[in-house]
Image 1 (tube, rainbow over the protein chains, first blue to last red):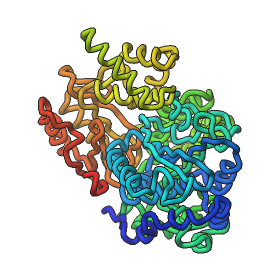
Image 2: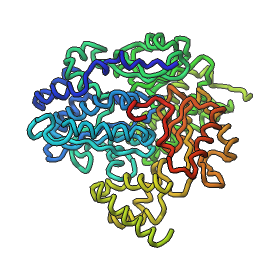
Image 3: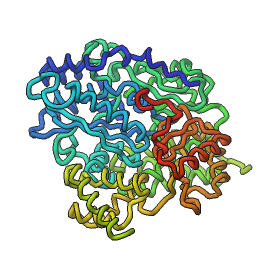
Image 4: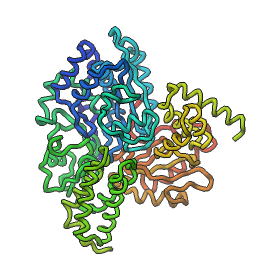
Length: 394
Length: 180
């Protein structure tokens, strides 16, 4: 059963354009201070404080700056951005325009994943309407000297382009291979100009914070993870879809809401996230405990954990860009290890070596993809040894 | 391809590169347009793009071969991409895959002899709450069953020779109202 209730979501209570109108009365620093006060952190999963990113870009001295919306939602189990793009696209554009005002940007780009090409015509129409309504273009809402426009660029089916520097490489017409950081995009981003890259959901919360006030957002959630968050729930549970919960919710509470309390494990954060066993369901979903971009895959009692690990490792072997040897070769080795386990031919000694290899991949990869690729594998072999060792082939 | 046709293509590419800002960042949008029109990016197109952008053709090849939605070899008119990620697997993508292979008579990674269908795997299509999901070109199908595979293929076959494209028809999944 799919139960995403659009009308009950916070986004529905915020009128499109209202946040932008209010923000245009504020100075650049005031907008950034407001975001700082709210404690908003990146909703794509990494959780970098939005205000710091914006402040760094605002302080960079350049005539040309860019606002990039990361709509390359490729994390397995995540579909909240597709949901926002379908239902609340106006709020995304409001958020981007507020961001442009805050850092002094004149150009915006939405990097939409190729799999969502069917949303392109709809978004193009909406951008045209906003131009007609003076919400984009020159002297936006009669604000003298504030010019900003948004264009759509399409991804082409590469998961790694969700990483901000790979995304910029892709925008520049290159292979989507992540760059070394520093320098960060806030200094040298798209075409060498200061660029902020934020997730779809991050931008969408901005007009909500502007209209409802920073204390409203700050008072929800935990100390380090404030506010509300959208969760994409799928797998073996009664209710599927996009749900809005406060940060810091325990897995147990979340599973009760979606009729998934019988689960034996939850994959939180998609392929790059961790697999949490039932014994740890009282842990909190927040940046200080279980960080997630919103992907919750409920794994029922009858599922084979090795299949789960195999599915995710196949994903990373396929999606590694191939730049760093540990990620390119290491993940293939971990997948071989899973096949050994499936055939009941893996010694404890070798499993320990694979574990150590996984840790090496985490430490020695350049980008977030490589650093997080062994997470699912490691958490499954840590928590489900009893289930995965000494298999007898059927 | 006829010489006049090639010249036409070259002129189109030159024009589109200028539309996209006349620099390297125009490369992928133009490749995507060629891909959409011709189904793949030929060596000729890569050479033209390299000339126009003043880069080595291998640079263009490097980009074209990096992205899974850009092909440098001809593929079927309809590219079917079935999601293989965990939530779709839990909802029975294996059986859908088997039925697709049965009905088309090809394996994943292959194209039918008549050049109409190519079967591929895709990583997460973002329809995890409505799986199994597959894309036919740009069009998304959700909650696909082994039984409905036949209907999807028939729908594709119906549009052969007709001027409507698959994308223009109504979608079966949840979409913004004005996009329907």
